[in-house]
Amino acid sequence: MTFKESLNFRHACKVFDENRKISEAEFAQILEAGRLSPSSLGLEHWDFWLVQNPKMREKIQKACWNQVQIPTCSHLLVIFAKISDFKSGGEYVRQMVERRFDKNSAQHDAYIAKIEDFLVHNVGQSDLEIFAWSKAQCFLCAQNMMSMAAVLGIDTCPIEGYVESELNKALELDTSKKRVAMLLPFGYRVNEPKPKVRRNLDEFLTVFE
Ligand SMILES: Cc1cc2nc3c(=O)[nH]c(=O)nc-3n(C[C@H](O)[C@H](O)[C@H](O)COP(=O)(O)O)c2cc1C
Image (cartoon, rainbow, N blue to C red; front, side, top):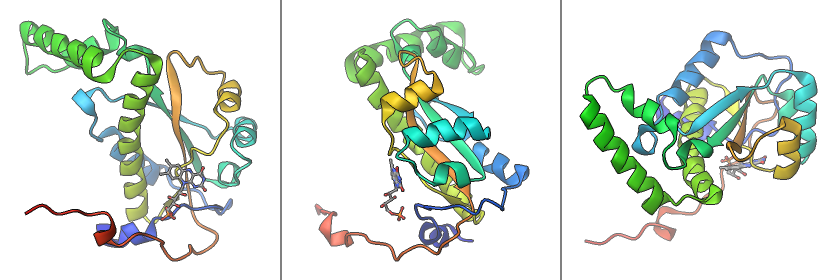
């Protein structure tokens, strides 16, 4: 499938075929698309949980407007946006910078200082500010995985339709460390999608010449 064809193939799948499972080789390709995603300052703001446990899925579904994608999908990813790792002085940022073997330690320190300044002055240091920034990077990662899946003929549905407090309880989450950015189920459609509804380009594009 070409990338252009995959854009029309991808839709927000509402029910997955419970009898069809994605092969581990194809799911590995999807995860690789996530791993290779861009992120602000190269800090890879995401963590994933792959939830295949039916009891856990049941709890998640309850917090998630009872959406049918949760129990029926082949693979369910919970994508978390990191928070505490981006508080000024955090060890994670240092680790992400120091893995760059093409730079020496003075260059690492200078880059960390630059990131620290960005975290304080551009992002902000409240949990909410960090979460908003982190979540934006997670969405890029999620989109890459959705695109990869579509190219492979695999369906997805980005999900943020949940009561977050209930979802946090179901996941026993420490929200000072990370919060859910999105749930992302993968599988195979049962029903054909409805035609796409989109604005025309001239309704949202302004050109300055
Ligand atoms: C961040 C985000 C959250 C979404 N949450 C849900 C959701 O909880 N349940 C759902 O069925 N669709 C959800 N959607 C899907 C959108 O409703 C869908 O992408 C949009 O209506 C366009 O339709 P299409 O993706 O089928 O082209 C979400 C989409 C995004 C980008």
